[in-house]
Image (cartoon, rainbow, N blue to C red; front, side):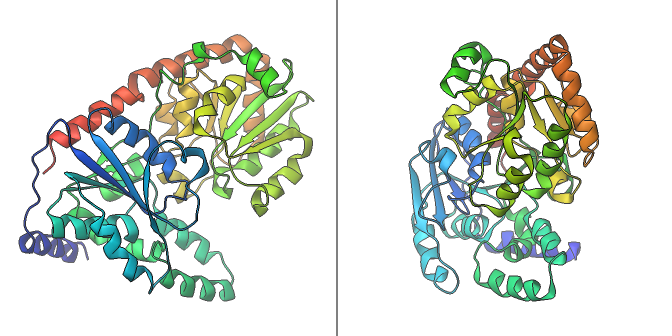
Amino acid sequence: MRTAFIQHYNAANAYFPKPNLLISENMKIVILMHDLSSNSLVRVYPIAKVIARKHTVEIIGTCFNDQIFPAYQNEFEYVKIKGTRFPLYLKRAPEFITAIEADLIYAFKPMLTSFGVGLIAKYYKNIPLLLDIEDWDFQAWLTNFEESSSLFKYYSMITSLTWPNSAIYARLLEPLIPLANQRTVVSSFLQQRFGGIVLVHGADTEFFNPKNYNPKVLREKYGISTNERIILFAGTPRPHKGLDDLVTAIKSIDSRNVSLMLIGGHRGDPYIEQICEVGQQKIKHLGYQPHALMPEFLSIADMVVLPQRSSIIAQAQIPGKLFEAMAMAKPIVATNLSDLPQILDGCGIIVPPEKPLRISEALEYLLANEDYALELGRLARQRCQTLYSWNMMEHILDEMLKNIH
């Protein structure tokens, strides 16, 4: 199979003209998104902001809902292409391609409506193409598919074939990934599978700086008492992220003053409703918040937990909120998955996945040892500034753009 992929790759490159690879200091770079209404903007946001330091950035994407993803809807001027299912999407695709006028295309996710469109534009308009991979979407879909009932499997397969961003089409595009001029990936797991350069979506350590925020004033703003201990989880709640384990751990802590602040997700989501019902008064669910407010919530928090569960989905991912927590000098508890142990080496607490008791023990230790917690946070910020800041992202992107081939 691999030989067939290579033959296809060589044949395609021989048939189509080579894109112009002259890289200048002020290019127009079009970022292609598969769905502007999805949480994939979490990944796009820091990369687009860093690129915009030296280049003109335009974000074009299909929008399958009327609303841009709430946390980032005011961060950029977006070019929206209305999303539809097949066969109607075939009429929208030419509109998408026509809208691309750029020196360079950067497609996010190997989806039909981002990478697929980008490939057509690359060869039709002779524009170099980069591809970013932050998840293994097909494996995530396959895992859910295999765990479903027979009736749901039938329904899932039928609906997937009409859905342009179906993971099935992403799987069909995987053999074409080498056609991108370069690839960036979020983790070493994805690098081993797809190649490319590891680029984490790090933090703006100037904006996320604890010296700029007053926790006491912010607690008053949000109605949180000074003696309440806040554990923060930020992101789109999903079962593989281990929120069930975190809620179990927090409920086992023998203190009335410990609460989980949950930022992300919508009320009415069955999974969130289930989490809130189990956690009851221990949970403060604030829903999605503007990204510009994240330093405030981190300033309020005593610590941050990333309780990822053991799965291929979690192994492929690196939670973007990790680096913002590091930048804000927060003590962090994370499970032993993906690159988390390497990233938090010497500045965080690593526990086994799916062990609520171990999470609880780590939290209780941090709550009882404030000096140690503060030192972990100080070291985390220092490590973020050195390895995971926007300045380091800029250096990686600059070198990549200079060496596109």
